[in-house]
Length: 138
Image (cartoon, rainbow, N blue to C red; front, side, top):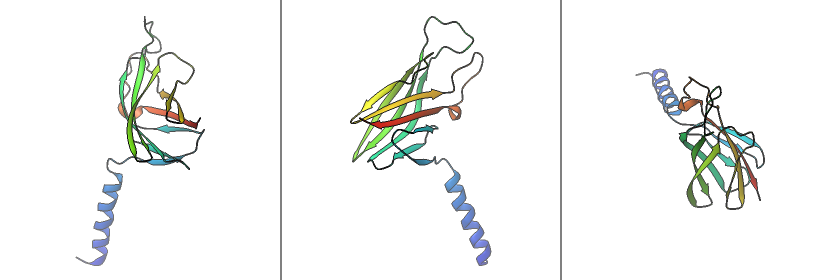
């Protein structure tokens, strides 16, 4: 096999590994919102803090266009690496709310909301979910 073909094969293998099931890891700044897809993670600049959006564990929010007895809620599981420890935290947002809920973790406050909001007759696929997350230090 000539060197050129070997290079092309090596490049294709590298691209397939890079583009497979990996997700992005971005750098976020305290106080600024980041939008995470399932599998994405952010590293908070200047802090020993990394947050990964693992999954939506439940979404019972009352869809737009429907009258419900209960507004429902959406819950997401995140993994937080802080210094040398790994923690899992559930973030739960009530349905039909205009304010982002907050959750404390050590000396940080996590404000968040989940999109998209359900619409009557439409399913939300896993790849459509976004966790909008703002981290501030208390």
